[in-house]
Amino acid sequence: MSVQLVLDVLSEAFMKILVVAGPVVIVAMIVGLIISIFQATTQIQEQTLSFVPKLLAIFLTLILAGNFMLNTLLQFTQSIFKIIASL
Image (cartoon, rainbow, N blue to C red; front, side, top):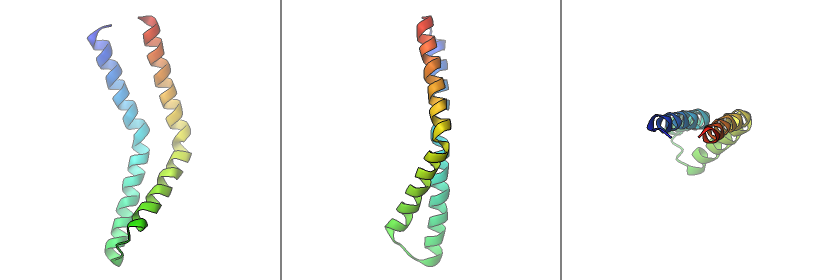
């Protein structure tokens, strides 16, 4: 097993992490920004006002993009097992 192969696998793993976690993080940031703007304009500083909508948005994102995320991780796992089998 060469150093280049390890670096390639790690690079691909980091890219998969960004692809899989990206949609959830982006949705959470957008919803958080919208809620913080709403709180700043209305001067309502209730903690559950920011937590519950973010939680619902994350669950909805996981429901909608879960199949894509799972397939991406499965393909990566299969490629790792192919690399292991070829060693």
